[in-house]
Length: 162
Image (cartoon, rainbow, N blue to C red; front, side, top):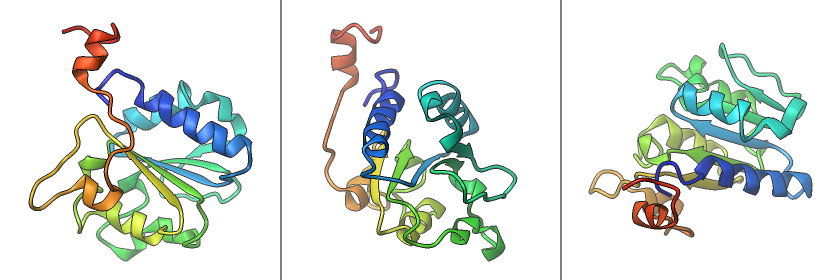
């Protein structure tokens, strides 16, 4: 989906409906920048209230249902930095990756390690800038897009300026 057309709102709607019905009980939302996590927590995801937490300072509290995190806040080059492994591999039912090509498309990236570790979870990658090169491929990992909303369509619908 083009920037400004509601990826975060769409992510919230998917997660909210699955969580409220009990279809998905533990959810991990990953992004690559603090601003993405903080805006998500303070705005669209606010209805999750006390069920939601942001993983910070490499500290994990396992009493929540919805976790927001920077991928590099739970992983690292040193094995001791891979705090995502404090959760069991089948802990999460759903993982939502915001701006997935920023890391998860590369075979040797930290996001890929996290996604592989939690391979039993349903995984959804969202982005405005998909990557498809010889070295990096979003579709190789996530599969063909199930929804596309182009910049052109966003302009035509009045959400974006030309």
